[in-house]
Length: 106
Image 1 (spheres, rainbow, N blue to C red):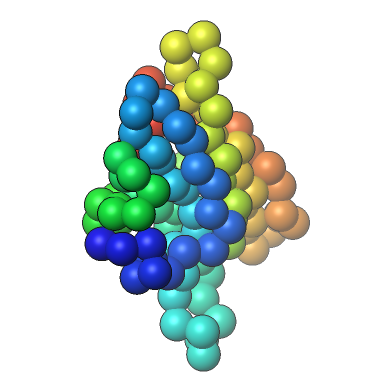
Image 2: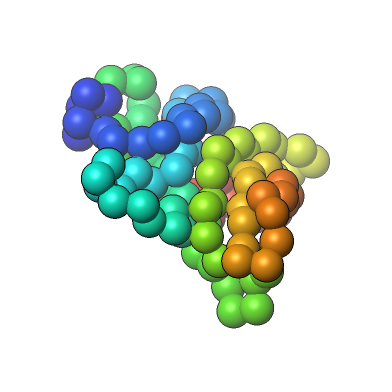
């Protein structure tokens, strides 16, 4: 898909080994107030043509936040990937969380 076809908020791009990973907040309908519960990643080799979105964070059972997943950034450090993002729940105000993965995709 072309960059102009992507509907994503708060984009962040990680360049790694000839591949670009673009992370962001999945955007829903502009006319609805929704809880924004998804973070997506797209991949590209040229910054023009992009993959279909893949969910890069799925809320695990027991995770403290249940809404407003926003503004992910991913950085590689000592062989792992760290996602910095903000989250919220009905009982907590917006907070930042650091998530770790062995892959830039999930």
